[in-house]
Amino acid sequence: MRPFTYTRAKDATSASQSLANNPNARFLAGGTNLLDLMKEDVERPTSLVDIAELGLSDVKSITSGSNKGGISLGGLGKNTDAANHPLVRQHYPLLTQAILAGASGQIRNMATNGGNLMQRTRCPYFYEVAMPCNKRTPETGCGAKEGINRMHAIFGWSEQCVAVYPSDMAVALAALDAVIHVRNASGQERSIPIADFHRLPGNQPDRDTNLMHGELITSIELPQNRFAEKSYYLKVRDRASYAFALVSVAAALETEGNIIKKARIAMGGVAHKPWRALKAEQALIGKEATEANFRAAANAEMADAKPLSHNAFKVELGNRSIVLALQMALNGGKA
Amino acid sequence: MDEHESPELTDDEKRLFADLMPEDLNEILDSGVNRRHFLKLITLASGGILAAQSALAEQLITRPVNVTEALDSAPLSLDNPVNVAFKVNGTARKLTVDSRMTLLDTLRERLDLTGSKKGCDHGQCGACTVMVNGQRVLSCLTLAASCEGKTVQTIEGLAQNEKLHPMQEAFLKHDGFQCGFCTPGQICSAVALLTEAKKGHASYVTQNVRQPAGPLILSDEEIRERMSGNICRCGAYPNIVAAIKEVQHGKPVEQIFRSV
Image (cartoon, one colour):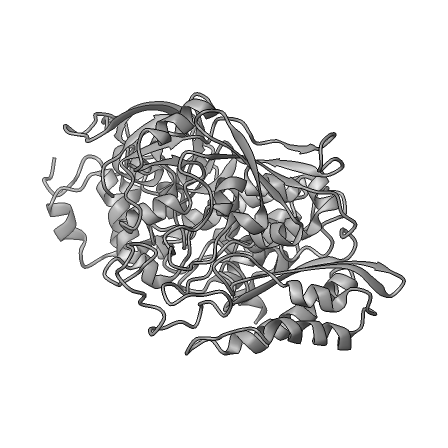
């Protein structure tokens, strides 16, 4: 690992200022992804600002503002605590399941909610510094596009980058219309809808998110909804646990009788950001909650997929996963 | 004193040594073996597994190694020195570490606590699992600098004097290992899992996460999911699950190797 200075931040504002003064400085929270990337020489910060002890870790009910009735997760709260908080388990079980589908018990005890959003791709060409990668070093080419791309994107990729975004938590957040609150070095705050937080690669695959350098994720807000009884996070992977998704689906339904009033579907493992399956959602509104309608909705979404040389299987897998996730959601978690 | 007799080995230890490595005994003793070296040798020589089956060996291996020969002195040159004070297995430690030093390397290289193992060093295998403030974490992805004021418990801190932790006993009874390299991480992970289950933490295979949390009795499926961050290359998984089940359920579980 390359040398870096280490400082323990005293408060959020001074932490952001330390970053603003040094383009090669990074926040250190759980460290589960950043330290790994530093050992691989992919990330090369000259300074780490440890923000883990700043607080900003509570799960709270929101009592005013546009998300009144929803909840707020502290940006520096641990994934384990978010997943197991009674408010989350009771009202947002989809988020609990998604968090628990990711990583291992040890990593979830370390990883923070904000850090989870900031995870970088696990594309092996990004990780291997001897390989070309536009995300790691702009304008060096993409090793994966013509290389081994079984794990890679089928939606929204560009000639520059075909990597997928790895988080499970963020897929549930996309389905739940979360809003990310951030604060910069001057103390200015802004909120970013989850759909605008992560980016498609386009011509700038080195930029994963729309967060500016020095902005700190203070909280993640979840608006109130009626999906708690009918939601499910399905994760399909190469082994039963502790692996990244080939395809994952966060599905949530609000029904009246057997008629679908609202539907939310987001996918992981298929794009450079959590992929909101808006066409599938549209196809379900006002329809009966039947397997045939679930299939039609899945087809509507997956028809747009553009697989690479090794991942055509993800199209059929995505199709079936959407149908199964919707069925599980409808039946309260049972197939 | 006979020059072949190392003053630091007890008769029991020499007898065990002779049992495990009869052909090497004289040669090794000739080179002047102290007790610490001896412990390393029998573990390295895969004697750890054999030895673990004898009560004598069990006692010897778990006897704490004396680490007072201060390893606390910092290396001469550090790029970015950071002072850190934390508690390890009940003992307060103050160190100056390079900012790059992980908790794992600090335990192993500076505090001579080599129980925690460096498997992958990238957070993929779980061999380095320790408990920080009572929660299981990966020491390979934790900077020592970030442990200021925290409490660390490692495999060396589980036994009380010469009495093994119930999870250590259960791993012995159920043969929850083959080569033993992943075992310290498996056991630390399993011990922390007990607390998580008591608090009612959910897992990805929990049927209904909306049910209010309360103490849980874990199924085999739940144990496997909750232990998925600890990889065992020897594939001792069924025995590991049986060991954890015995402690978690609080009643004897039949040894798998007897039931098949």
